[in-house]
Length: 54
Image (cartoon, rainbow, N blue to C red; front, side, top):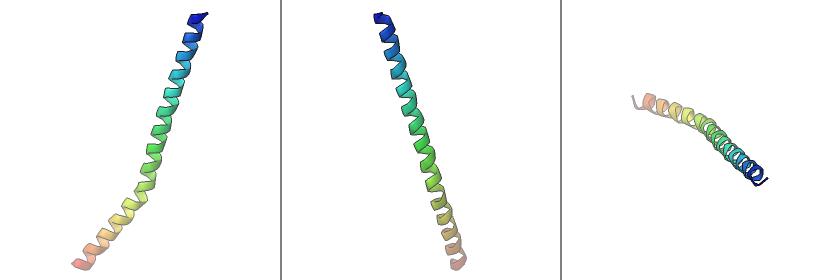
């Protein structure tokens, strides 16, 4: 009986770790998507600045 509870506890702990890892990965992907438009806008500004400098 004690082994069953220990196994269940370990399963729950592993599931919690897996969910936390998935949440971290999802957050990282979302952050990348949020930053991409900023990079494109900055690249466009840089190109315009180069055109005006030339």
